[in-house]
Image 1 (cartoon, rainbow, N blue to C red):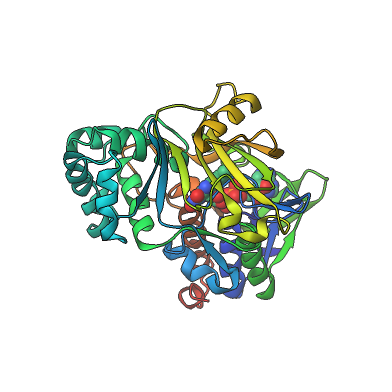
Image 2 (cartoon, rainbow, N blue to C red; image 1 turned 90 degrees about the vertical axis):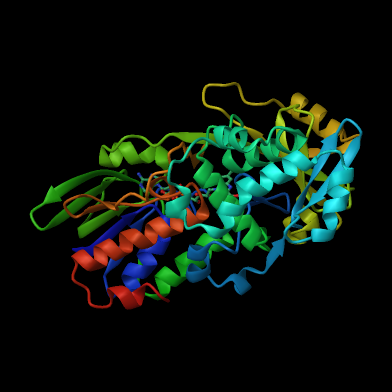
Length: 424
Ligand SMILES: Cc1cc2nc3c(=O)[nH]c(=O)nc-3n(C[C@H](O)[C@H](O)[C@H](O)COP(=O)(O)OP(=O)(O)OC[C@H]3O[C@@H](n4cnc5c(N)ncnc54)[C@H](O)[C@@H]3O)c2cc1C
């Protein structure tokens, strides 16, 4: 009998397993897929490195900084700012807190008027100075918060709404204002980027650490059922095998939580990413680009290879385009995506080759207002639950939730090294 079974080898499960084995417990991780990573997987397709859906890594996430060796990831960093397709052409907005001299350019772009700039400052300032507990007090939706500060001009409709739609995986402003402000804080503190070898380098590093401290990670091992036994829990696998442990941490994806635990299914939002190969990039800029004219279906697009050249074979370029994937709605189709991309880039893209399309219906847990406190990992005797849906919908949330579950297990197991083991 093991001390702990961790079900799921995404960020939450791997971080939890690494801390538990470093804390001296005998840990086995059961992962249904053929590799670790969960929503952070990278595949090599025709020599291109494709993450399963476009995402970025913010090195300012505190839980990331204490979990992985950031230098070893060799991050390529996106420039801080955004390009916006307008009726007049392409405008570039650099981050005013990092590039104060760019404010004049921003004003000239016609996208920023004095009223909006003032309203944005009123909205952003608390995000930079207040702790999350205060930000979450009297939380409302992002839409209501922007209305309240008077942010209503093109800075909102042409820049912030399209930009945040891709980040939050919803475009209706229904997300918690406190959560959006928290993300803005991280955008100010850190410069998002991607590991040279793909986003999967993050979970692979966590898995290597967990294995080095003694955890056994079993792939192609889908957990189907849990049964309480006097002094422990038996987990039955899809292949007929079963594993026993004193405690079980369920760190599965939102779609799988209910079957294993009986807890309510977390609401989620979907994203769709299109990956195109091109001989020539449509721009020399590495900035993320959005359409400020309110057109769809693409919410953002970027030339990946300007930031992470190893994502494509030498002499080729990789372009990502992301659309929202609302539950129940028809996903965007290739013709519409190509038409919209050629409008955004102002270029003939007919020679671009579609390498892959990723439809991810459960990309991110929904984060409605009011933002609740992170939920306890303990949900039944000897049973714990972890994942981004228990914290905030992000890499930070997944890792922090894994840490919280590990702390609870170590404390309940009476392991004296619990506190020390939380620092690698
Ligand atoms: C397209 C996309 C874009 C994103 N963009 C960002 C971003 O820019 N910034 C950001 O911070 N976050 C982003 N995220 C979110 C981030 O990737 C997730 O928050 C994080 O990876 C979740 O980790 P997790 O461990 O909670 O869950 P998961 O990664 O879902 O891991 C759960 C694991 O459980 C396994 N599993 C499920 N059922 C079983 C079972 N029965 N038995 C065994 N194993 C099982 C799954 O195979 C999976 O490996 C994005 C996500 C997506 C998909």
